[in-house]
Length: 363
Image (cartoon, rainbow, N blue to C red):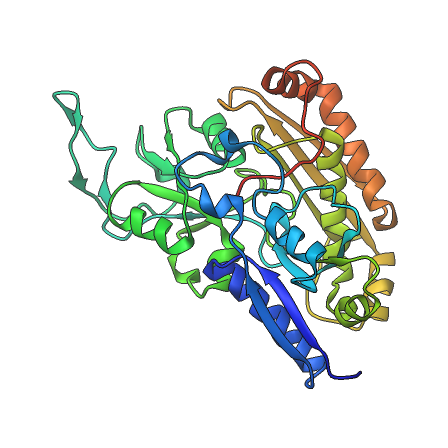
């Protein structure tokens, strides 16, 4: 491969830069003569921090400006968190690679010896008091304050614990953890993948199982977008595609596309591959041919959910099938959710049959 300069488009947050640097390092392992640079781009989602994502509206809040840089030739490839990527792309661009997934679940985080804002109230005002570390979600005190920017998370938590007080939590990971440690919340919910990637796994109090909080579409996976006609870049990044992760994420995204969901509605889907004996899938790296053989012995299982914002209605569905039919299974999952009552929830939020064409899920 001839020496060439390659520019990676990325957001400027610590997590986004970690992901871009990881892709850069993987590419350099395969092509040490490459000259790879990062182009840090501020997106709409990065600029608007004082408004809940559900109220900002629009599509591609965390990718639009990066895609525009790709189209202008200011970046050769873009590295995204898959849960931020809309289901449709601008003409000339596409999702070329989905890298190996980290833990897709949500992380429940509390501060050691935290100061609780949900303590007793006197004279109509909250009185902050010291308390022992809350060790599990189920041990949250009555009326506890939980920080999250995601309607998906708040809907599911409220369906289990309607007494909780959900408060908006925006900003980068450092900011969110600082607000928790300052006593603004009893707990916060973050994507486990991001916390682990930045080396803060020790801050996770409990990893929430999907039965409590079904993950966002694509959560934990990193995607690489590029120009369709750029043969050099397409060949360069192809080895980074993780077949098993790709199957699962594409199934989830097919469900999202059928639902035409946006960040104004709590939508979740989580796909996983298991053996025919229902043993857990090994996620250890393997040669591509071995991965393809592995798929033949696996079953694809997908769980989906659509909820009301208040959490008083949760519609769930489950489907199993051949990994080769990943996208059609995702579509069938969405159709089942719609038939069970998800359509009514969607229509109530967006108005009769008025829904955005592209979907993305708030982080």
